[in-house]
Length: 323
Image (cartoon, rainbow, N blue to C red; front, side):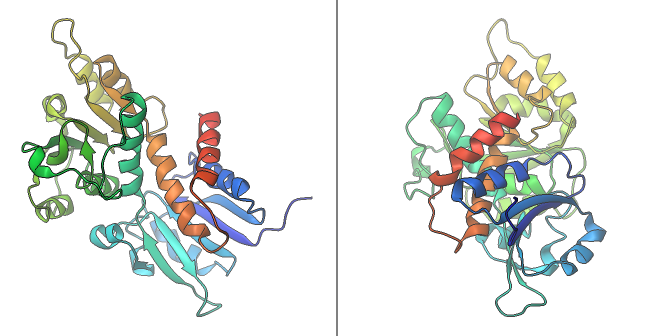
């Protein structure tokens, strides 16, 4: 007999059928013994969000939000962490029904930034067999003066996920290079009021430029890290340009790291081209995993005493089996 469900969470977006979030969150619930919790997926577009929220009851604990809802959710809740406040982009909503049984107070969070940062950290520690990379989170960030030139980053795309990627770049320390000092955004369309430029200008010692996606290949060759945020096959043309680049028989991207936030198809053509040229490529499933781990912590707080280690491996194993 199935357990009765008392606590509900879900991921919303449009389209949403491809989402692996239910797989990850439900694996965490099983590992934590939360047998009366359920995480599902529901297709909700921008015009559907109001009606969906109106139909919820007090069994609902939280939501994950994907395209196109990360800004649409803003009028319904209160940004409650540093990056959701600065970016006005949230991928997580937590419901507090304490003051009323009719409508909850909604707290908004951005765990995409943490997901991007930790995807890089995990890759550098695994692929390079390196010591843990210093971060602000661990309280031992690298001294920028020790790396006067800093690291160079490229972001493909300029949507909401790209904004979170830029936020992550303000906190990432690249092994052997130090903090990121230069970011180039390559996008098909330029924003007149560019929120990414505004964020970059608020960072001391941080330079920023935005160029056409068609020019991206030369900037990729100069980058220490690259983050692709263009969905589906949107970066295939960039991959084709990379495949055509060679310098004799030597790889042109050694010790350069790409995070492609796309995880379907897997690997993407961009990841394949990157690896063919000697670089390290991380699939979007790593970002998905780490942003989901942060969401589980937020959604289940107060339900039990837990450590991340109690459920992280269960989530990773479920993801590996699915892929």
